[in-house]
Length: 248
Image (tube, rainbow, N blue to C red):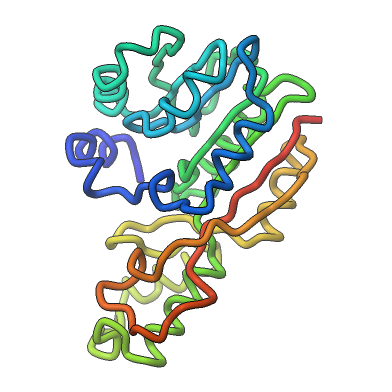
């Protein structure tokens, strides 16, 4: 998922891209953010897209920095929330070799580390850590590889959404998918997207200079995964991983 992809999809972001805030019916993410919020504190939303989290952040933090790779996303966000005067918007490519860093008391990053490139993900984690002050808080949400594989197993075993009619990839595409899955990359709407293991997340954040305080599932309804989920399909539900961590 490169800059061009996000610039192109920005006008239809609301309908095309999964809404984590809306679908987290447990409220775990918001609760985690509120646990370290304060009127004298600053927060950076890394990969803010069209600003879904601005109504959560702006009322409870003194300063909100919203950054994204897409200029179009940022324009949409700024247009949606002109009444929040404590937000500043800036285009930043988190996978660039070097970026100008300012320090913030805390950060959120909600399903923004999605690139299939290992090199770019490494840079993303490095820069993310650099943005946060010592002792600062991070709430990170990422797609779960365990959940993605679980959904594939359910679909294939019970032929959900006619999964058995799907044609297996061949040739170069098959080789590419095998290479990707070894790195936790699997398609979302035909776009190669990084998914994370729980233990992988814990290791990556520790190496990036964080102390991981908790890793939790953010559960979603099966209708977010399948067009026609069977009525008997209840629990376990599909999920993303949410991490609450603190900068060492």
